[in-house]
Length: 401
Image (tube, rainbow, N blue to C red; front, top):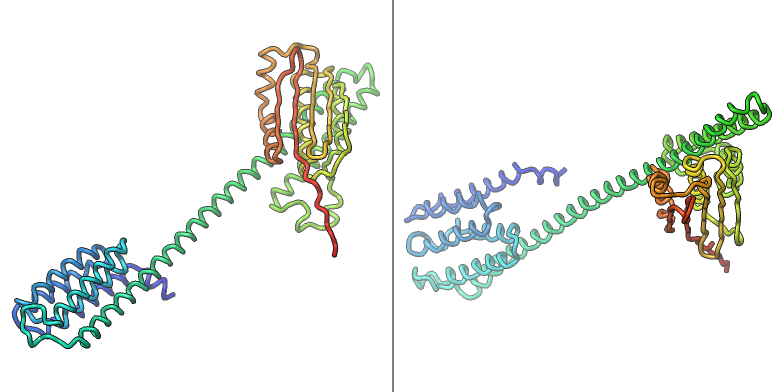
């Protein structure tokens, strides 16, 4: 509460006015020569000590130099010189100014109380008195220096707090943007792939409805299965959006157990649905499947899923696709190659595929988030090729003592 009151501008103004009134009251006890004028001028100048501390120090020092021939020396209103010095020490930007103000006051004390000014030898004080008065001025200077150090320290703390707050807000915005991008990629992968399969299956079911009812029934079943899985994935994404929690946090065990976990085990299901949609899909695995994190398994699955979606969209039914997963000790490599339905790639086909909407961008972002590399482009002759490499983190070995 006290700090808030001290931070108010009117408190500072009232304090400066009080100091000026004090110097004016001390001046009222002198009526010789120009004492009222010099003391009143010092009091008036002190009102601006926070805004121009060095200028105020110079004016007060100049008025003090007029005292020996024109007014009383020393006078009680000379305390204005100490106030001006404190103002310079606490408010001046340069440390050199603070030292200069202290030196001016010290020289003034020696000159005024040591009998060096031409106002009479009888005014000279003893060395002990000069040391005592100089010690008081030095103590005031050191006190002002402590106040300056504290003010600068508080200002640095406030600056650090403001910087930390800005950084926190920036990190929150970055995290929100990253989360929105991740959700957009997930939505695109789920919706685009499922709808592409469902549309092709629906077209096939429409053609085979009369001539081959069994095949039409299989296509309708594939549509229903694909729609259910897509709806479940949509529910999972919506639950994350509503709860704002990582999967499994703050949820019941039944809810977690009842959720379908997306992993590499779903690759065969994705390939089978692409086959039902009219593609010829070959799934090949090289090496021993290592221990992948859930995020990496989802990334691999989405890359394959989106690649098959692009094949369905651009090459159409009848295209041949080869999916190769190679598990090395330090990385897993994914390659999806299609023949483009037998049609040469050509510049137009390559540009249409390369535009890719959010598909290629989403795959690249997924891989880069995992620290891997991603390339996609037309093959020589016909077709398209997607290559991705994800680093594999070795599981940590725990030792017990």
